[in-house]
Image (cartoon, rainbow, N blue to C red; front, side, top):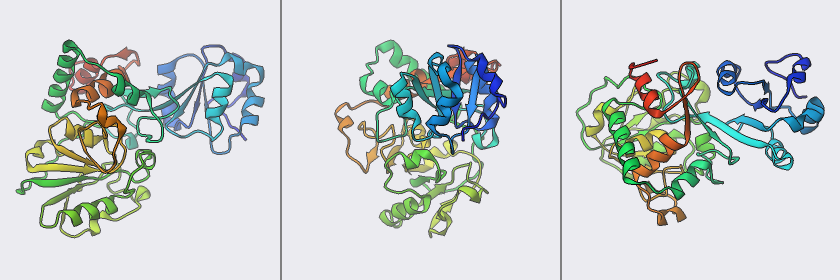
Length: 344
């Protein structure tokens, strides 16, 4: 059976008009800020037991008034995408943007940006092309836009800005030319959908260690997974001879100690890439395959030979939707200012 999550009364359906939006698979703590962003009448639904007959029966003839159906990541019932295609509805997937907040999503901090992709897929899905992929493939930057992107990259690097903007790690070490292996949440869709060779942190770490005997290796767990066994599928701490930096911070101030970075599909791989490091990818993540990373997969996109500047411009300027504390649309400039405490 299909359940309304927020609007408990079916009488609320009488308010449906052409500005109404339907949302599938959004955690309840997200409902308030999503309603403020999208406005109008918003309807949130559970997905696990939802079926198309219940959905149509609930909305009856009013389904024709609704233009947009949104899904958080891949939290939709199997029938929903084809259902939207058959009725000509705009189907969008939503995820956090690449500059998200000053805290973790696991702590329910409200994001400062979202990516809203109407291609039916998400940027981390290797099976189909997302809007981001198409933006990158077709982009041609002029001098002004190139300068704009470079300036933002320089500002991000100077201020150690990242997705979650946690403090920089105070962990100090004397090793040089180290290999950094980036841990991820092993239940994350960015692994499951990326065509990854390795699907756990331990298997990735063991592989990197076996190929680099005698070299110093650092392993950095994802901050969401530290002290959280719920998402654990492996035990990278069992790999011998690896320095594990098990804190909630980043390593950008220690970048001179790191020679190369290895990742399954983490955004940190791209963040280190535009900081000038060599990055090895073990999946078809969105920033691999353009001739910039050391890839385990070959890609037809290598014929396009994109630059880091072009990838950044698409992923950080064109693709995301940024908004301020009152949920009004803003630019990346406003968002960076907000993160740095220059304005609200």
